[in-house]
Length: 303
View 1 (cartoon, rainbow, N blue to C red):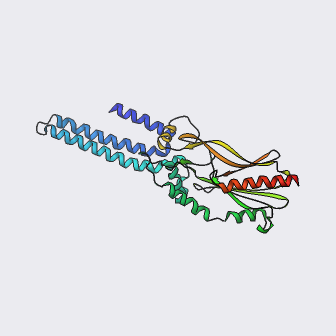
View 2: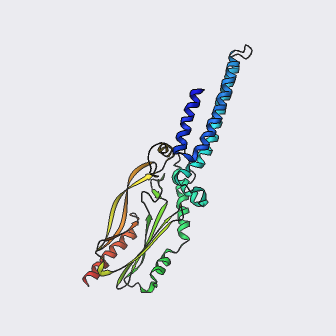
View 3: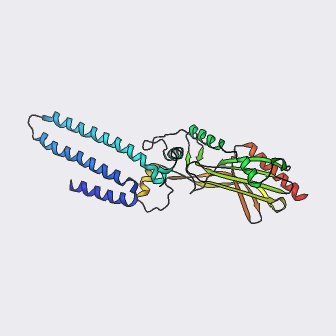
């Protein structure tokens, strides 16, 4: 029992140092298992030296012990699962229920340790509902203080896709093979006779963060439009790696396995500046739009 207690004290110390959100839970697990083993250890000798109980008493004690241990494991697993998201987001409890749901979607991958709470199609529906709440086209027009009738050269065109940056968003590969992110970028591009306008809005479904930029350039200052492909290192969260990392010396909050994921970007260069928008490579209309922009820029350059 001394060695058992010593091992638990070491575990509790490391948990306190690296895994503080689960500290009291680990203490509770220790107390519960200690009492269970203590009771088992107290009754076992009595049954061994009792002539009346025989082997059946010992068998029943072992069965009760195993069942009790399993019930404890189930109970503490449910409690542990609730605190897992707080290891990723320290302000998890202060976020909205919808944002918490998004975090759980990306964290729980459907394994035994992390039963899936939201299906891929449910997340897609949640994203669509979120995007439908805002008229991004009108926001873009308001940013530039322009009316749609002024865009004689390039009609307003929407470019969009998931936004992938290592430290800014959660990522997950769904059961359908599609990689999703907790961040999404919507861009609107349009042009007048003299200027080209590009509006970008990056939203995060897991937190109240929105990055909005609006840039305008004279056609003559734009060097080129092009489609570029980049390989991003996408981190996929998982609970076992998250637990292990808390006992390591990692300081990064990015926990889990990583994959290399190819993303497609609409890019434009203006002197030494490079502007990029995430686009959906499977959307033919977006690529046709960009080819049209290249043609329009060539015309402006020649004119």
